[in-house]
Length: 295
Image 1 (cartoon, rainbow, N blue to C red):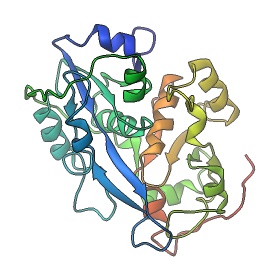
Image 2: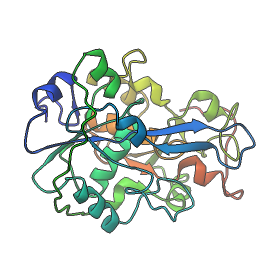
Image 3: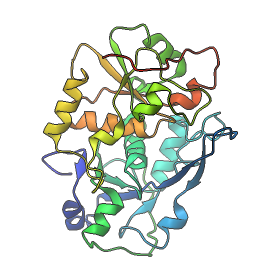
């Protein structure tokens, strides 16, 4: 990967390395559309294979985050699967010992960071995000193709890092734990309870607000420079080694975007609440705060 920052690569870097034998490029696109208030579920979901098939980065393999890389029996969609299932699915698309992985998606990059986070959760570190995703690739007039590559199956050895994953029970305990900082990455109006796509409005008690859109250039979709990210996170108190950040959002997708950005400034220990507000708000006994909470 890039020697300057192994967690992210530029369009230029990827274009120069497309033919590397040890590089696996993954398109992790998933389409999510919010449902109207009062719907049975907060969003509608569709795997991105149909939009991947006609146009993708040469050599890219499609990863279905809704089925192959999820526990399809869980109450929430795209819940983390067992290590065994993840290892089998990763190996089937060519991810294993001795390869490097670059992930992208067709949206804002958070489905890519979701897969980045899942790989790291299972002990695989040689993975980076394409900065700006397919939007940046197109903007650079880099090549696209409809040719579907055949992956080379490999053996993926999963070694789960449980500290990178949080359950609802663990997050409830964290609300009274001074050593943990819960980070709500949704928009401020969602955090304050002025709007919601979930069963109940508000944020988890004690959580700070750090909207995920702050970490990217909204015009290009690319991450802000590392020093700007460092200032954002330092101002939020997330670089204090005495505390552990735990990010959450609506369903554990955008939360991985902030976890990834934090890793770029040296925090590789960030936990992600997998169920996020979809799981939390479904239990009427779990508390929520409406209104702002001072840092």
